Length: 138
Image 1 (cartoon, helix red, strand yellow):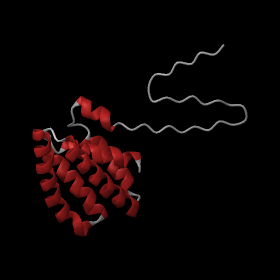
Image 2 (cartoon, rainbow, N blue to C red; image 1 turned 90 degrees about the horizontal axis):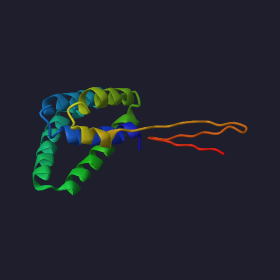
Image 3 (spheres, rainbow, N blue to C red; image 1 turned 120 degrees about the vertical axis):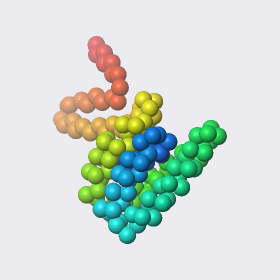
Image 4 (cartoon, helix red, strand yellow; image 1 turned 135 degrees about the vertical axis):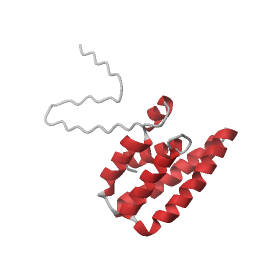
């Protein structure tokens, strides 16, 4: 699954429990209006229902329900982007500008995605790390 989709699905569910909920809903519905305009109104109503589920899950400490909702929205976002790949850039912008900012720092850390790509030729070496890396050669 696309790392941006994974991050966006996670951030969406987290952002539903914040004061920025209205802004988040507007952004997600806008994405649907560009990709599947005929479903936009239904998505708006569904997001409101899912928000109620997220809030109830958080009140009850039900992490399993919250994770199930994350997975469901990751799949929906993946389908949307697969049907219209141009929406990938829109989703990235939505993630960076709307979904991530209202999250608490701990939640932001959970949605960060790192994509590393490298090519080594001949006798070249590649060292990659998502965090600290210590290389000692003798």
